[in-house]
Length: 448
Image (cartoon, rainbow, N blue to C red; front, top):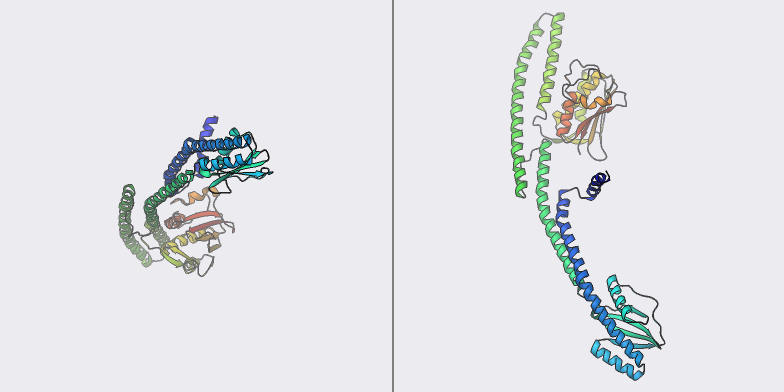
């Protein structure tokens, strides 16, 4: 059980820290193995070569210093020391000085690279019995080593390359430069490939919102171009289907309205009677139903998206509802704009207002910009409302929720579906909620 939980837990932890973009993941796939390889090579270099060489150099220097100390202690006379110093400088490259009546320093400077100090300290500890002190930082090209002897301190200045392998930083520099160059090349290539995918995604998003993408051309790798060609073919098939459907709807609309108009004319010329009035009501309801069916089937109808000020359109819809007897109030900024299809917007809003007016006595329409970008158009009513668990059912076409709200005699259950179809066609959405007026709140959320 613990193993199963561990297998479930660790992938989530790892995924939490992984980049979410294709560019980031592709870069990680290329850079991470290179970085691991560079680290492994560097580790092997320092462990198997550099540290070994440094240890041997430090051990050799420590042996020479031990010889100097032993030679001085065997004969500490000034003449013998002068001869020892001269020999050490000529043969070993060491500068030896005697600091009489001095003691070792109490402070120490540590190298930025700790293995250097450890290697030299270990070698001197193994070779010397006397207390010692060294500084590998103060002089860039030398190492200052001091040994406590009888009568003072024996100070030895040794070339740095006698104690350490000084080429290690060059190796690290070349490794770093190689890593940076490889990463830069990887970023350039990956960016070019990701840009082609981003263009395809932008074109698909624009087409999904109902816009046209005539300038889109396939770019990138073969697989990306193949996907782009498939998108173009799909776009053409969908556009052809939309054009055929639009032509069909125009024909159906004409064919249905012609006999309907004749029937309305016959009813108007007939003698007034209760039966004729019932026929007129049925014809009006049939005309309204045909309008809703065609509006839903037409969808966005090829209408172009454009920037429009919303208040005049909202007022036009509100005035139409008020002429039909609805009590509508409007609240919207005069300069509030959004990218919409004007006729589709009026049709969607009119359906929401008619739906609210049919189930309540008061309708409030408001429009406001969201702080995060975009616009909300809100329609509130004081009707009976809908239970929250039925909100999504209300958006289903031809669903009238008779048990939750009073049935609208002219409705066919397409008002909310048309509103959501309009909003989603622009990349937004339509939602339902409880209204402050006590009834239902319908919100069209338009993108920024």
